[in-house]
Length: 278
Image 1 (cartoon, helix red, strand yellow):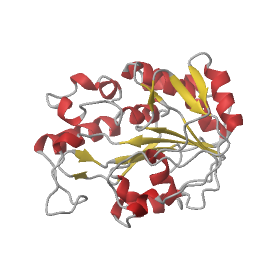
Image 2 (cartoon, helix red, strand yellow):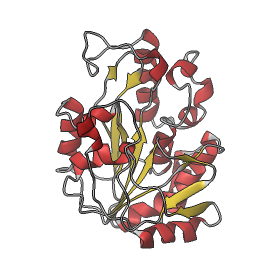
Image 3 (cartoon, one colour):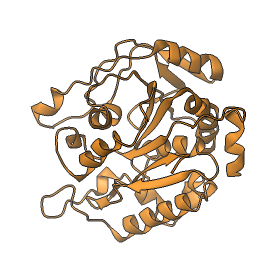
Image 4 (cartoon, one colour):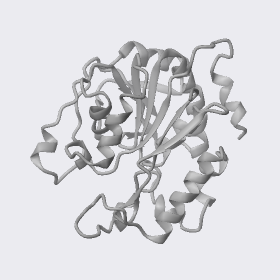
């Protein structure tokens, strides 16, 4: 895929700055209640981002048959995890939804996308946004991941969603480039300490190099990217949100890495911000 073709879904007559787009490695749900290096970086983002009109999140934690957009005007805070401290289950992120924007997305992408009135904000969304926008005063909607689509189809859908950047909407992809919970190996009792298998460090570098070189197609065709790719991505749901952000990227935009760290043996927290200004 030619990166120049990504601009097809954004009007060339609109000279206003495009809203930044963001991929975040969200890691453990405990980040939602811990002050650590990752949550501090999320807090710092609020000072660098223009205030959005709304937020659209593509989270690893909402997989569906078909693609759906949340329609609820008051989305619930979903605690989609087990065995954590009670304080985590008491967390609430009381942002409003945006049914009008959700319907606009549905109309624009019809029949590729439908509406959903039941889902709220899962922890892939709220555990990050509570630090970037702690007042929860910006409307938030989610778009689900259709588990039947190929990576290339997810990328094509992302291109169709790129119009959101011209409307002041912040698009957030939330997952992890490397995510293998079966192989998690915590060193010294500190889950967030830098520690990883050799293949995890190697693949983290491969992903970053492809990204910074704008060599996007190998990231789409990730199954043939590296001999150990199945160790890094045993299932694709945490990787796919990154493709949505890459699908909205325009030529020559600035890519800024942050939280670039391999932890717990088999997780990458590496994240990036893309914008068209310096």
